[in-house]
Length: 321
Image (cartoon, rainbow, N blue to C red):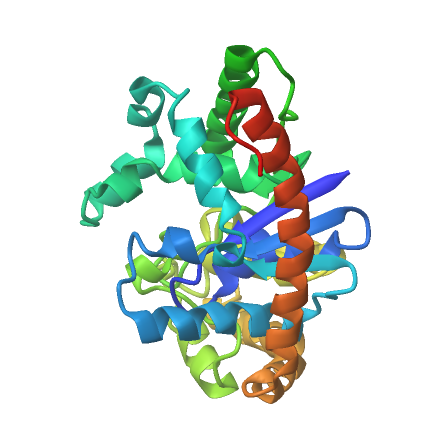
């Protein structure tokens, strides 16, 4: 079973990235044949600073390795190291109707946030489909907000196979992560664009300051509190064991607990989880091993992509050298 995941190098990674996708990628690397790419082509829709993009791209690789990704199990590579993916994106575009792309929720959401409505942003789902289909991926771990893109990829695979009368592409399926949406310090979905993130490797003092500032309601200490609407409780649930969360739910339901108590525990759990990783991440900052991992990952990924493109070109009637 082959699993394909991608992550954009659009800024420093945060808890939303980790619990929404990265943790699942790392936990499941032993169960599946995993391909994980750093989507630096996709990042061009929002980043047009060459030095910054290069730095962020490498940072993503170092972050994954610090968090426990094993390159002997998972194939980690840069999207741009497999140029065949852009060729496939063009070919898919020739069999895809405009109406499919016009229905994309992500395009509407991003333009509503002020991102310029470029052709690249509009055709983003086509490149994403190429990323998935070129490795003949069976499963794609995504959050709920990305399910539509997987459905569009399924449609494009069908368009191609039906147009050329060959089952070149397998049908990929979305693999939903239960913790797909992580609240930010202001209560909205944690996102770099909202400026409400808690980064994975920021200093302990900075992380604690942000945690203690998480937005809560004004329920006084001597009143019960609603755990189900509390941002701190939602974040605690991502870190703490189920039996501990049962105890916290009981405390929320009784008078006498202040939100500060839950925030302090969240800060402790954050440091337990990411403190050791922070040290590993610092050591990788200038380690050539990161670049070696990316080169080997690119070699493995491109070999698979070239096999697929041989079949694609043959189906289309394109010249095969």
